[in-house]
Image (cartoon, rainbow, N blue to C red; front, side, top):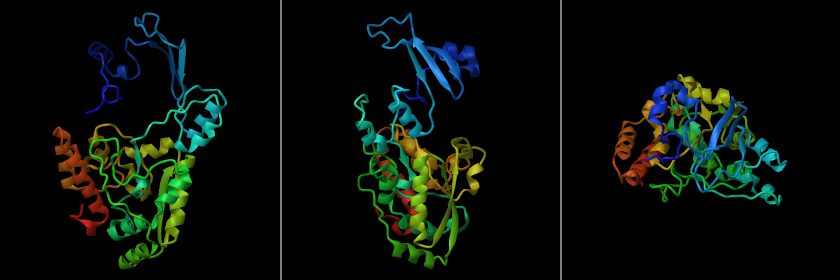
Length: 323
């Protein structure tokens, strides 16, 4: 169940929706403490205090300007320069923010996840990656703690399953895979693969590129050469449309999460191939379990455990049946 305050579960005015049609997406309707003043695409949204707002808690600010800032570092610098009053900041900025006495830091445990926390996203239909032994070798060849320390300054936790600890269905006993260069090289030899060359596609922000560079160095030690292709957000996320991602090999994807566990698992359905399932991995069993879990109240815990097992089996069939 999606929370009412969520963007995909919000309450809309039936009268306004019917009257505006598609225009409802760019015309705000409400009776809250602020009214919509102005919107400049990719620049800013301006809100002003609602003069007709009748509530004991009157608006604290006359005007609020919301500015979309893609690069976290830029947002941080604007905050420290006192050009903005509020921003989301990476965990890596915690020490820097602590030095500014004018800044108050509110820590909120996140529920989003990136595939690199377990393995990078691998296109199972592409070249050498069709062999599960090659995918297993890549997983074993990466040093996840080095990624966390190097790209996130050790400020984020490692995800070993799809759901974060605060969510229903969190798999506390999920297996943890540690780096094993010898085992990775043995798997590649068993698969008859050597001198593999792959492309790692990621966003061009500093954190994503740091991750890609660490993974590149890790995999070079097992005989895999990575070429990093860093794209701006527009070009990168455009691959989620029209099957544009079918030729990708390795990618780094951050999945936004919600409080409904099925939101985390839905990206790996067969119906998502050609959209956001850039791995192109499919399983009829996974699809069935996802749909059953989403339809039945109280089965999210079991559903997540079974879905996690199905995903794990796709990467390492030798573990099939083990929980």
